[in-house]
Image 1: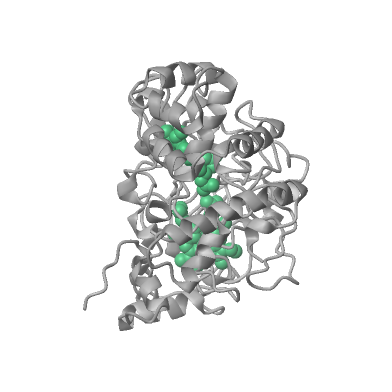
Image 2: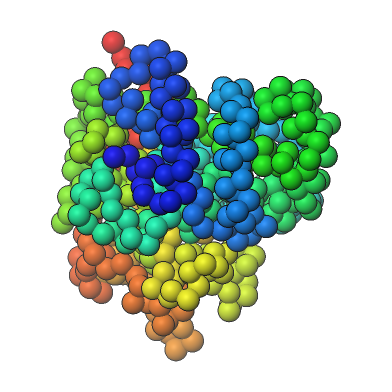
Length: 445
Ligand code: HEC
Ligand code: HEC
């Protein structure tokens, strides 16, 4: 059973509609293969279970969106086309300069367009965000957030712990719930209210298209119009051609159409090897038992002790810590301190297009990231700041009392002074392998 059908009450209510959308779409796609059908059947992915925090979207509001949808049954393709217009429209921001695409650039697999740790936004485009921009590709199978996840695509007897949800901390239940946040966040598109967004939509060149999609009165009521907007954005993000094409060299390799080079193949082995990178234990690299191509993430929430990034404005306050799932952005788990420091494992598809890595954008090259994995425990002095007495302030972006949350499985199962687990050749080859995860590979005949 696909992850989108995980048994929560709300999901069961809405899945028939959703699955049928997915299937319809596959039928209309020329040349949907067996494997691709599996992906199609799994979209759209998640249904609201938790309330998001930054904005006034309550979970009851989110349920409404689906209720509104099933009453009117708007055409999927029309919603996608409209969602695309909205996604690229800078007029929908307070600055008039920022659209979704300004941060989620289509040239960078809908990830950040530049090497900044975090992007600038807000009414005058000078507000610094607090987190790195994630890629919006391959989000369609992210399960709804759950503290006890059983993955039916791999081994359903194993409780994987906290998994899923959107954003680095898993706090947004759906991509439409998520879309409300940037439109209103003072760091991003900075509209003061939903009504302000809708006022702009009424003047948009695609206002007629909006009404054609959701009905003549679709822009009359601020509240409803805003919900349609987030739904259209969500549907756009379920366009397989743009958001999950599965056309990297690695996909062609899985389909048996190309061979990896020796170097790429070696990199893959190091990536998978439990005594070497052990990367695939979290960034899954194989086709699932049910035939789903890997997202290079199990979507688990894990603390890996990424060093503090002093470049971020929020971090100028020494008492501020972004602790991911336990807050402060996410509020529903703040009592559950076992989640302090945990962030959702990102997909590594298209990771070679990024110039900024981890939730706080601390690193700027894949080499640095892999060096960190290899030497976090053996050479902590390379990564962390020092205390006043000269000792190393290991895990300097998490208060001491939560250091026990930090993952110490391989490749982190070394001790200070041990030999790093990866040598220079292994790191170089792993980077070559990660480059095979970039979409848009063309098989040479
Ligand atoms: C100023 C930059 C910026 C803009 C503009 C922006 N985003 Fe984002 N987006 C981010 C950041 C940063 C995150 C991660 C937030 C977090 O983890 O708290 C994010 C997260 C997301 C996610 C969740 C991805 C995941 O990994 O779960 C989605 C979906 C998303 N954005 C869609 C949109 C849409 C749709 C728009 C336009 C309405 C938009 N974004 C505008 C910066 C931006
Ligand atoms: C225990 C689970 C786990 C293992 C093992 C693991 N990762 Fe990760 N990976 C994560 C998590 C969680 C994050 C996000 C951490 C954060 O931002 O705080 C991450 C982030 C990354 C990123 C940044 C991606 C981005 O979009 O910013 C890269 C690259 C990466 N991992 C590569 C690797 C490689 C290579 C290995 C093997 C050497 C590996 N990971 C092993 C869980 C894991």
